[in-house]
Image (cartoon, rainbow, N blue to C red):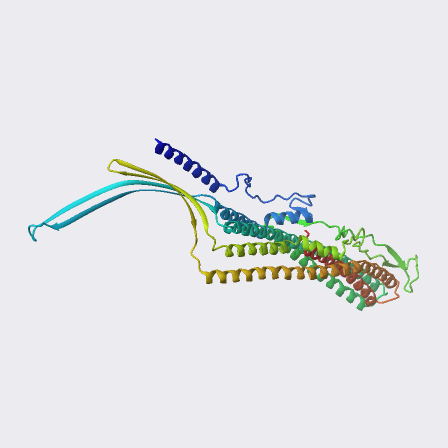
Length: 507
């Protein structure tokens, strides 16, 4: 009766353990919420420009890229792999279950000689068969920290993979923002060249009218026509660069939709776009000597053909306020790649512990149940055991594995030291570049205003015959170049600012 009760208790215990382990295998974390299938983000728009085009802000482009970048998904899956490895390391503390069943059949035949004659033999055959069922459970009690070190190592590897995921997101955000600013710069340049085409068109029409009245030479008309052609060519190139910048932006976002979109200005890239409306052309009358004449022999002259560039209207510049020392400290605290390297150091420390403890014994416990049925007779047995098992030790192998682990740990520490030094230099470099451009941009804006004033004066002098077309065109070229340089400075500043933020680990 005691044996029957013992057998029932063991079978009940075995069923509970099997059920628990099956549940754990199906879901290592029962509190983990099931993730919904990833769906491609639907972009909301702030303003519809027409039936097929939409406007996306910088933040919307960044969000779209984060949701669609395969590199981020790869990093996320690597993080999930490391989480699974933590569970695998913990599984050493869960019982090992074994169960087996089978049928065994044995047949034997024996032959021999009788004692009365050498030529007379006798034979005898025998056969038997039996069914057998075996079940066992083995549990690791303690192995003096080997399993614990392995679990900690996988935990630090998981943390490292998590920081790698953060750095992948940081890279994507940086790439999108720089590509977005490149589109804004290209768009501003298109505006500049479009106005240049209109100004050169007005100059050509004015010069042609003045030539017909005998106020200008034929060479001025030819020069005006040449500059107009150049302006049109430059506009085509500017449009091409804008289209290329849009392709690069879509590529950084992994934007694969058929529907096109446009961008909007940002805080430090806030240029007022041209409304593409021709200004009213004032008609004045002058004599060939430059004096006004309202008589019937007056000459019709276009006198206000300049369209003022509105690129500086409502433009406000807001510098990034932070001290260099604070920026370096923020970088040490926030850079995901540096955090990842520090976690690798911790993982290597635990790996070295695991190697050093490889000689340690294991304390185990086990239990088993055996059922055997042979020729209608059943035999059952219950076993329980506990043991202290010492592994086979190769002292030379352990020594060199420890040396190898120490070298890997030193490499991990050196990588952290190298990264900290590089981060320090990166922050300083981008900080200085950003500060230089913060000082340059106001001066470039002044230069735009100065060249515009010079262009207006040259245009007025040309209108009354006090200078030639080359002087007028030089003034216009200086004006256009000043505008283009200003746009480039604003773009360079925004890129330097993004590089500086990235060097601090800030999105």
